[in-house]
Length: 101
Image (cartoon, rainbow, N blue to C red):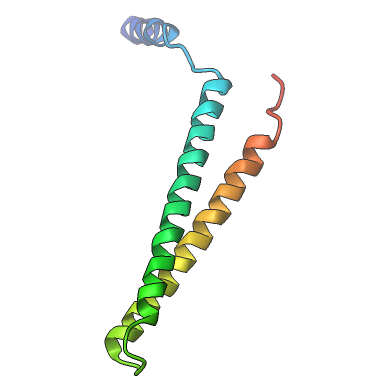
């Protein structure tokens, strides 16, 4: 029993020195993450447009390779749309006031 109490005190003192980061630091990191994500999406859209432009110059007949490129372009479009939704969620949660303690 005494041994358990000693372990409890040791753990209590070990964790008492921990400090927790304020919410503003987390919010600043979220801002940076949103900005980085927006930048990535913008660059990816440019590349997707280049892919579609190049695809337009491929032979007009429907070959399996051309169809594969079309499917890949559609997949990237869906991925970018999903990233846009995530950014919107991150921005809306960032704008909500934090609860007062």
